[in-house]
Length: 105
Image (cartoon, one colour):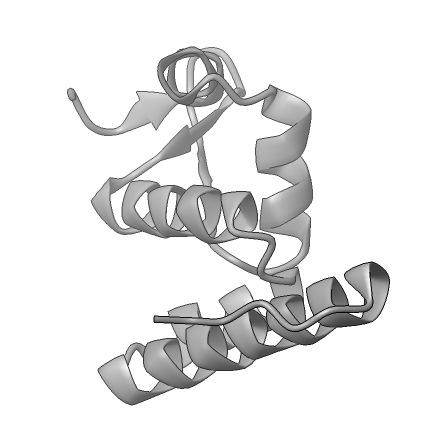
């Protein structure tokens, strides 16, 4: 991937809308730079990494506020804690909705 990358190119590669990228940026998950010629947003290596991490964690249903914490603190302990807590919440919700216990191996 050639960096910096424009928003439209990155959105195509990740199959995300540019609107989603702008929303995540407005939430403070990463920062773009403006392309001098086009005025479009472009992303450097650090921003692309943040976008990819956000993409994966959102697919798991992790809230943006928790993703922001992960991206700010950048430690394994925080990632582990957020993912474990989210998995626990998902489990409790499934038990509550289904009214049964789902054994975890």
